[in-house]
Length: 175
Image 1 (cartoon, rainbow, N blue to C red):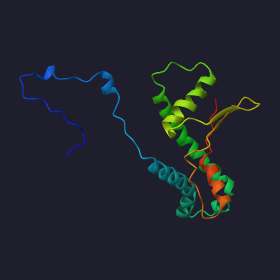
Image 2: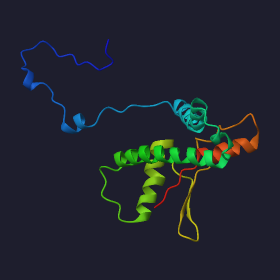
Image 3: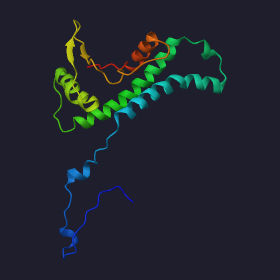
């Protein structure tokens, strides 16, 4: 029982070479796979929790006590560094795939427009709400309904939820 679509051909006297042959573009692009949005939310939450707890678990397994005295900021910075490395790798591959049929971007503004329109739409099914630049020439993207943190909460209160939101959205785009 395979999930691949099957083609039924009538039993006429056609040879195998006269059957419909797929175009090279069809063979080069695999069929689209879709992922449920709720599953991605749960996955991202678990990735952050796993990366945050991993140093603690390694310390208990190795029985090193010096890490227990480490500041919370160092642990958050290590988690943020690992998240940025994962995000950089995934984002680079995803962006390359989205812009492979485009010409090279010549201006920084073209890259930012691509991120605001195409990349944001591919990731979150909507465009960025607002694009601004500050007085230093840094682009600021504003999304008023950012799906990653809209349902974020904590049993420990608003301050803990805000801290988790900062950790979840610590990605920076440098152009």
